[in-house]
Image 1: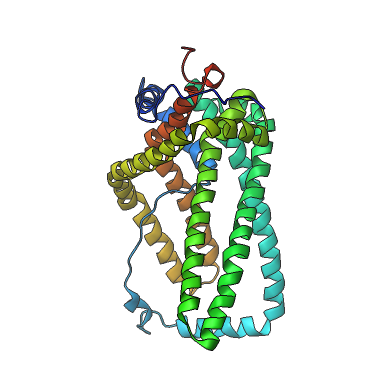
Image 2 (image 1 turned 30 degrees about the vertical axis):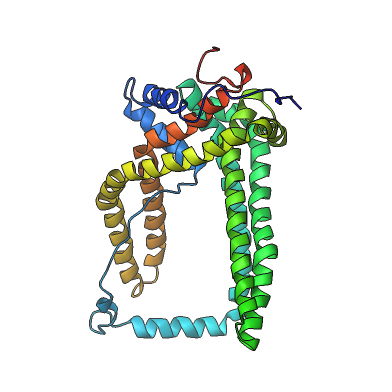
Length: 344
């Protein structure tokens, strides 16, 4: 493992903002290319599983109370309830199969997202998003990062379940049966505090993995655990700087969220609200014509994909900046971490 005990940061969390912003502007605006934005939006969608903003849709529930407006809903619900009762074992089997299918799909998506994390990083660093070539080159790193992701998330959930969920369940049961005494309430409060601490710790691990471990893997062509060893060696003599990084990142996220209010509202009004209205309308008809449910699901998936892609394309300046910012911060630890800049 590398010795970074005497290595101190030569660029602060504040100083890193300027170079990161300048490189973001170079990538997306000098010159401006709509195709480039669309490509970055598509890869960002793959990295984040299309997790983007959306808009709610309000409809009038009185439509479902008027028998004249919706004459078949009562009989439809009755038929569905009777069918469920008479086919309970089949439903259980189908539920198990569905769970397995969802697990397989989730695993496949995590794999592609892990690979595309390096594709996106490669495009940001080189200012040239060559998806096919970068995807091919990310095979080793992507596989290692994939294994980390499929192990870290279930492990984190299991830890929370064992340390918080199980004790909380027994305490609540004791409170229901014997009454919620001051001791039980204090224990629940304590578990709540432990839960908050765990969530913060897991969030920090997740952020450091994305912001630092992945770039170190990319730059040194190493696996995830080796990259974590390097990062921990960097953190040990520079705890304050990394703590300030977390605080600055939170502040930058809040600032970015403020800037995104208007474009996200416009996207919601122009796309998500009409799309949700279409899906709800088709769902309304599906109570009378069950086969329309296939069209409902298809339209919902298409709307989710297009909307998430559009969202990631619109916020490309934000996502590119937050990919570059930790790179600039990391460069301060030495020339072996240089990525977007030439050696100083």
